[in-house]
Amino acid sequence: MRYCSKPTLTGTFNEELYSERGKMMGEEGLWANLMENYNTGADLHRTPFGGRAFEYMSECPNLSYLASIPEVIAMEKTGSHAAPKHAVGNDQEYHREGVACFFTEQALREGALRAFEGALKVAKAGGLMQSFERLGCTWASASYAMNTQVFRNEWGWTGNIVTDAAPLRGSSNGFKGYKNHALEVLAAGGEQFCLDGSAGHGKEALAWAKEHNDGNIVELLINAAISWEYAIAHSNIVNGISSADKIVQVTPWWKTALVSVIVVLSVLTAAALALSVVSTVLKKKEA
Image 1 (cartoon, rainbow, N blue to C red):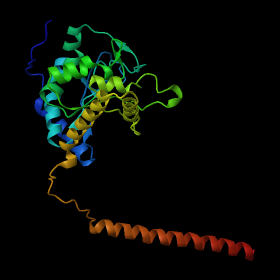
Image 2 (cartoon, helix red, strand yellow; image 1 turned 180 degrees about the vertical axis):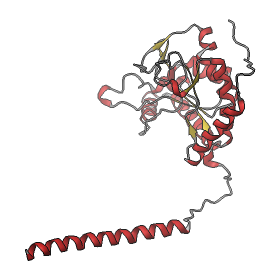
Image 3 (cartoon, helix red, strand yellow; image 1 turned 90 degrees about the vertical axis):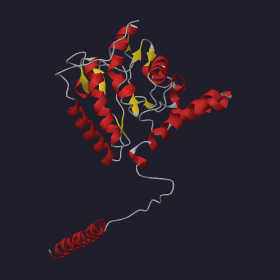
């Protein structure tokens, strides 16, 4: 199997520009109290009609490889993790949930995977968001070959993996259907389920483990939790905090003054409204 060597471009790539962009995105995440920023977009521009192409870097996997590196490094330095998306092969928006993308291994490695390699293998992004579609016949988030064999074992990447939006569907369909495969995702190396606010996937996986006495599933859940805590521990959430620190809530004077003004104005507004109602009633009685 032939693979690309590390690409080099001259005269066509401005690393400083992408470093500044990454710094800007990281600082935006920092001041918005976001530990992960779902950036950069590393899918390829396959068609000018691609609905999300404006989020992605280029039509060239080597250019995306190079551009991702300084952007992710700059973002990570702020304490807000970069989480490139959508890995991988998210080439269309129309019916993207369930569309099957077929590649030869060489085409995948030199194309869709190559575009993410710089962000993960070289720049060590703290996170990664996956895509909706299938790689062959396997949902991308349940692909052991990609999540574990390539990202973890080959590239040595240790960041946090989250699915694209995958809230658990209800028990009316027996928790079946596309994207309702928590066990497969965990077994493949996935860890988080996007927009699953009730943590339904984790609860279902734990219930399965208890019912079937499956210690392997419990271990996978523990590993997923450890990975998430690792991402938190290396993010802006704990920047500057040590085990000896004490967190004290401080309310600045101007905030207290502002709240006082709001309360006073609210009381005056309510009083004025009450007087207006009384005045209207009295006028009607006099008439």
